[in-house]
Structure formats: C-alpha cells, structure tokens
Image (tube, rainbow, N blue to C red):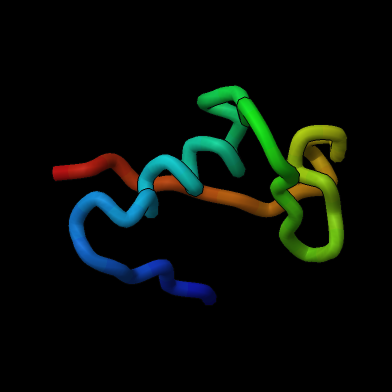
Amino acid sequence: MTALIGPNGAGKSTLLALMARLERLQAGALRFGGLDATRTPTRRRSCARTPRW
C-alpha cells in the first residue's frame, strides 16, 4: 500500500486522476511501477482512487 499525502493544493487528486486516466496529461511524463501511464494498457496497471468527501 502506498499513501499520497501533502498540503491542500499540492496536486494529490490531480496526480491520481492522471494515473487513472480521468484527465489527460498536458506536458511531461507520468510513470509508475516503471511503466508509462499514458501508454500502458489499463489491465497492466494497478491504480485506484477513492472519492473526495
């Protein structure tokens, strides 16, 4: 399990939305687990997001 913590406005929710492909990456690269998150098929990635309350 990995936790992502930081102050308000640091981009935690945006990062998770990019990893889950809920938003499109506009610049740069996003990699996790050694895989390019924008090109790796969904079934090969492991990512979950919980709703904000």
